[in-house]
Image (cartoon, rainbow, N blue to C red; front, side, top):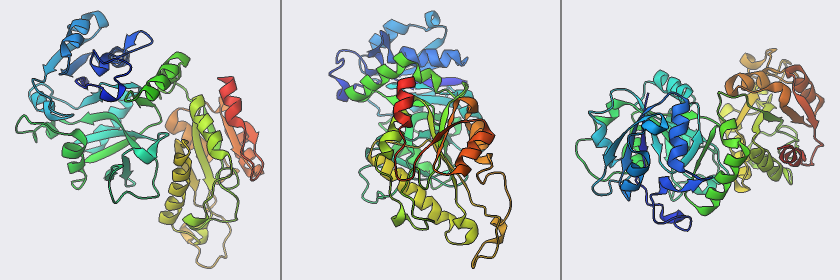
Length: 415
């Protein structure tokens, strides 16, 4: 596997940290950002690296040379004039022969790239972007996908059609690109990767999204620089790679995250419990995954469609995102075994392993994210939640209805 790193950025927003070197050479804990990236690639046996350099590129070439002293092989593509975030990809047409990883040079990450590549290979697309939730979705570009993981919309923060309610998924800045896409580059010119290249693949159904809770954070501002520095020092960056066992907090939804109002069947009924966003934000900061597992018999009863349920859940994510919190994933059970409701849907009237108190949703999450269940927690307001946690082998944290749990404080102290 090859990796291409776009390392030509000037870093105007982070000039207060360092203004006399390229942004990828800004140091964190005594090492340049670019060195962290190269070491992460090398640890995954990705040693064929191409660096696209421009502004003060000689600083990068002097430091890394041919890469041998860092255990990799480095080649350089040098922009004579700024070509944006994609223009220099033209020069790769005769250099890369297989799907490759494309990275922004201002990003600290630790991602299982072989797992990412495996997903991309199965999708039969020209490009796959890594998406994840973040704590500032209100000023980020949002990515919408269909059930097959194909991107259906890319909504920029300045777009007039931006939805008020959204699923908190944004582009993380890590991509896998097929050589077939490079054939579309017919000349050297300044181009924007997102707008001029990737978004044009959406109507062709040739852009996929790989959703992951792994650590990816850009260094665009001094505030983010400070956050990443802390996360490196505490070991959070490496811990989030899905090759390593994860710990999670499983959260019930109704009565634990949102105020209990009986069955919720429309988005206007979604209202967060006071203080719960703060609690979930602390879970995010602790390094635990925040995963919602919720029984939703409204589907089987015919009280709510799946599209409406997804809209309700998006409203929850929007409200959390407005307060700097996010969930890493959500699993719901649409089944209900009891029959006799007007308008019920027979295909969902079954006994299943996913409806709490059964542990199916927790077990599915554990398989998807390599979760250590014995060192994870189940948080809920009902005995069915607690029993599902017991059957999955989790630790239990009982919340009180309409009162936000203080598990976030506990986990931060534990960390």
